[in-house]
Length: 187
Ligand code: AMP
Image (cartoon, rainbow, N blue to C red; front, side):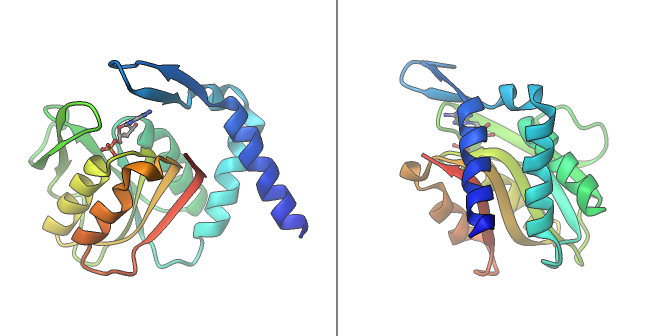
């Protein structure tokens, strides 16, 4: 009971920080700006500790952070869990040998890359991004992790826009259907 109250409180506090920006980066998109959360250090700490606790002992041994806001959440989570993290970056940013995957976004098209030596076949990965929209971005990362021989155990987002059904896109492509989804807010 007390935990439910605490969780509901965390949700409300985080929700209150999210700034909705209409028509960004193009008309018709309601952009969820999560940056105000970072200005409240105790709330950010509470949020990350809550998820670090939840993700303990889930068999995850590496976190993949997605360019760019996923870097913030993923690196903090990895640090709290004592796990290594690697990054999936937009095309042309990673210096060493990479593999890439091109996909469509809620707005536009993009290519993500990972260093080929960032995932091993023994890796059980949690993918972290700020927001799940159509699922194209995370699906691209799932693709990259699997091409490099890793297993996707779960995906973490702060926000899910569930009306866009991104989760079903990812599920179709994961080899273990047990993949778990974690998100605090659902719109
Ligand atoms: P998608 O590939 O459609 O799931 O889009 C997810 C990626 O695009 C995430 O990295 C988000 O940061 C970003 N994104 C997509 N839609 C929005 C939105 N409405 N508000 C904020 N970020 C978004």
